[in-house]
Structure formats: structure tokens, C-alpha cells
Image 1 (cartoon, helix red, strand yellow):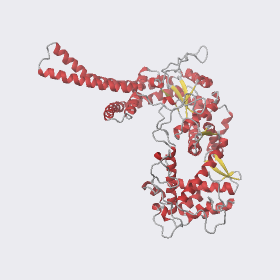
Image 2 (cartoon, one colour):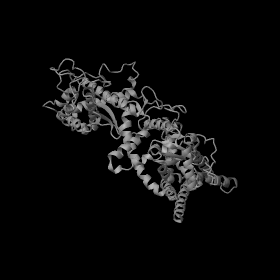
Image 3 (cartoon, rainbow, N blue to C red):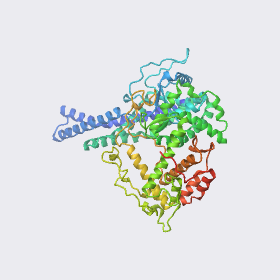
Image 4 (tube, rainbow, N blue to C red):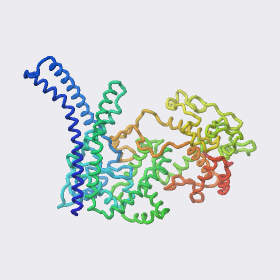
Amino acid sequence: MTGIGDGVELGAQAARSRALAVLRIRSRALAVALLPAAAAVILLAGGSTGHLVGGGWDAARWVVSVLALLVLSAAAAVALVVARSRPAVTPTVAVAEESAPDLYRMVRDLADRLDVPAPSAIALTPDCDSWLEDRNHPAHGPPPAEDHDDVAGPGRPAHRRSAAAPVLVIGSPFLWWMRVGELRAVLAPVVAGTGPSAHPDIAAARRFIRGLDAAVAATSAVGRGTSARAVGAGLGWVSRLLLRSCRVHAAEMERAVAAAAAERAQAVDYGLRIVAQEQVGLAYAGWDRLLTRVALPAWRMGRWPSRLDVGVVAALTELSRRDRLAEGFASRLGERPACDLLEEPGVMDESVSLLAARLFHGGPAETGPDWAPVGWDEYAEEVVDRTWRTDAARLHRVLDTLGVRRAAEDAAPGTDGPTLSRVLDHLATTPPDDPAPARASATETDTAPAPVPETETGLAPDTAPTPDDPAAPHAPALPTTPTPDDDDDLAGTTARGAALATGLSAQLAREESRAQVPGAPTPPPPSGTAGGPTAPDTALWDDRALPLLPLQPPRTGREILTAHITAMVCCAAMDTAGAAPGLDWLDGPSLLVNGVRTTDLGPHVRSLVETGDPGPLRAWLAELGVRPEKPVRLV
């Protein structure tokens, strides 16, 4: 115990030493700003007393006095910008004490055991991490009105929760996946950080650093006027100079604070924390997989899963069933989950799920016809089926633009609809004098009808926006041939595959440009009206640059073509072989044949895309009883 106390004291002393170094830099900057004024005072005093007289001294007094006024004005402007700039705040969902009394009680009890101040509030974020965040800046609003001087029980030391205490931000996947004891063990070193945060020197140094960081961001977003840009550039240069000077000391201060908090937390649930850290890594892997494989397709269809945290539990349970390395993790599910500490976990889950959709995809703040919640029991029909049929419809529209026949000359009557055979035949036929595949264009196909000419916007004449179309101003001209960046990606495909991939990419870009209105930020919703009773605290952060954290880079042309052909195959399997759309918690949308998920479709589609050989895919279709010549239902 003595060793732990010594480690805490050493860490705290190191943090205070670094904080004082930051404050000394602030004092030096102030001294530099006051130096011309001091020199001017000396010259003026010397002149008034008759010691510094003469033409040269008079000129020096004027020059130094003017310089002092300019420097003081600049210093005042920098200080005003640093003081009034709004520091960045993590987007979170606030957890009121009335909605989670057990969670607040657990955190306060943890603070009592660690002998540190309790956090002022608790918030949830759609991330697998937890930290303390200072939200005491005036721009973040007044402190809560209620006075929390209560203690966990009679006879225990009271910890006053003043406005200076930071906010405890908890990753929402932890609440649903971890057990109560595991969550307490993981939060122990985080809550222990409120002790060093309460020290005046450390708090002052942090406020100065956050103010400089906010000032740099504010000066980077000044108006377009020449004078405004010049003033902003000067203020930004000074702020960046001070920030660079404090960078090393600030980093070392935060390391010392974390070390002191970790040493103090060793006295609480240390053995359980080692086990809980394994759950942290597992939760991160499951959360990332759920967002990229399951949630992202739904967001692209205008639907946001309203129970993401429940989904991560299902995904991790499925992972423990498949992966022998995760065996034993699912056996923990019989213990009390940490989400039981919330009064209404479903409401919180819905609010966090909407916030995740906004951060990672850029969806609007309010629900509507084109942005609606979807439950996991509706995911297969609302997301998977609609996604496949929408992609298949887009694929056939591009084929129409390329002039590809809907049916062969010897085809039976009634088969001129959208069929899978049309796609297979088009990609399988390769002209003998095929030029460079990556440079292929739509006119290099050997189909009889000529390609439909496109307008300046890149759309076919019957789909081009009219002047009265609201989408017209927002649909810029987009190329329909591969760009240099796409050449390497499409180099391994056939000429027709490259042309089709280029058309699909352009069509997707046009659809996205028509769906977005540039320069129109999403207004924050009124309090308590963002998809549920608990709304994200959007008043604390700027949502004009959504998505803040895109999940994946834009898809390449080959990936887009592969996804559309896969969607067409799945549509044909559903309409002609009785297959059904399904949801796999780890892989996302899946095709179910006789209730079993198919896992061998991908290699056959890639063979068609890369080599133009439909043989493996046709054999796979014949084995499942899929009839590619039959028309499919599209959206």
C-alpha cells in the first residue's frame, strides 16, 4: 500500500511540475507582451522628470508608445480569442441522474473508495473507450442547477461535486457487453483521474491548452474578407506558436496524470481489471465489425438500426460461438449486465444508435421517411432485400445506358425483363481485338444498339434534371470514363467489366450528389426530440462537418461492380430458388438457402469480374436451382 501511495505522489508531482512549465510559458508570453509597455512607461517617466530630454528621446517615446499600444492590442485580441473560443467537445448522449441512479451510485462509491472527487455528470458515446472531459467552459452552458453534496452512505467522506469536476464519458458498448463488476474495474483508473484534475495548477494548464487549441480552430474559420483573413492569420500564428511551445509539457503532464490515476486505481478491483481488459479488446472488435458490416449498409439505405448496443452483444456472442479463442466469454452473459444500471436501456440505446449514424455516416438529426429507425427483426426485409434490389435495378439501368440488349435474339417470349443472364452474357463476351481493359469505354461493346448519348450532366436524356428539378443545381457533371486513380483498380478486369464499373460509379456519384444539398448544415434538434426522449447534446459540438468519423474510404470501381453483381445473383436466387435475405452479425447481409447461410458466392463473382469467366458462377447457380433467365423483381 505504501508503494502505491508513493507512486501516486510521484505521478502527481510530475504532473504538477509539467503544469507549472505550461503556466510559465503563458507568463513569459504575457511578459513579452508587456515589455514594450514597460519601456514606454520608463521613457515617459524619464521625460516628465527631465532626465531623458532631447529630440532623440522624444522620437523614441513616440515610437515605443505606439509599438506598446499595438502589442497590447494584439495581446488583448489573442487573450480574448483564447478565452472566448469554444473548445472541442466529444459528441455524447447525456445520462441524467434520474435515468441511471444505480450507475451514478456506483461511480460515486468508486470515487469514495479511491478518495477522489466524483465526476460532475455521466455521458455515453458510441465508442469503445472511456475518459474524463472538462466541460466547464462558459460556451458549454451553465453548470447543472442541482447540488450534489450527497455521499454514498452515513459516515463516509463527502465529495462535493462542484462545477469544476469533469464529465465521465463511457463507451456505450461497455455498458451492454460488460458485467457490472467488469465495468467498475475498467472505470476505476478513469475515475481516479478526477483527483489530479482538481489541482488548480493542472486545471489552469489544461484550460490554457484547450483555449489555444480552440483559438487555432476559430482563426482557421474566419470570414472571407481580406482584413478578416489577415487578422485571423496573425492571431492563429501566435496561438499555434504558443501551442507548439506547450506541446511537450502538456503531453508529459497528461502521461503523469494517467500514471498517477493508474497507481491509485490498483487498490480497487485490480485482479478483475485484468480480466475486464480482455473484454475491452473483444468489445472493440465486435463494435467495429458491427458498424462496418451491419450498420453501414442500413445507413446507406436511409435506415438506422435503433439497437446497435444490443447488436454488439449478439455479434460478440456469435464470435464466441465460432472462434475457439473466444470460448468462455459467452458464459459471462448469465451475470448482471452493466446496462441494468440504466432505468431505460432501450431509450439510451436508441439515442446512442442515432448519434453513431450521425457521426459515422452523416445522417440527419431527426427521423423521417428517408431516415427511419429499423429493428433487428426487420433488418432482412427493410435493409438486405431493399439493398440488393436497389443495386440490381441500378445495374440494369447502367446496362440500358450502355445499350445492352435485355434479351437474346433466340430468347423465349416474356424473358425481356431484368434477368441475371443479361449480366452474365454481357460480361462473358469479349471482343477479339480488345484494347487496354482499364481504358475501355461504353462504345467498345459489340451489342447492336448504340449507346444512349448523355447530356453535360452525365445523365441519359430521359433522366437528366430539368431546370425546375430541385436536384439540378446540385448534380455536377461527372466523368463516365475511368479516372487515373481507378486505372490500377480496374486493370485486372475485362474491358466490359471496366466500362460497367465506371458507369456504376458515376451513377452512384450522381445519386449521392442529388441526395445531398451542399452548404446546408443539419440543424440541431430541439431538446429531447432526436429519435427518442433522450437526445444527443448537440449544443456542445459543431455538426456542420458530418460525418466526423467516416467508417470506410470510398469504394473502388471493382468493389462497386462486385457488390452489384452479387446483389443481382441474390435477387435471382430469392425469386427463382426460394432463397431468403438474412443477417449475419459478423458479416452483415447474407443469402439464406434452406435456412443456411451461403459462404461460397464471393469467389465465383470475383472470377466473373476479373476474368470474364461465368462458368464457376453458372455451376453454382445450377447447383442451387437458380434460373438466371427468369426476370427478377426490382425496386
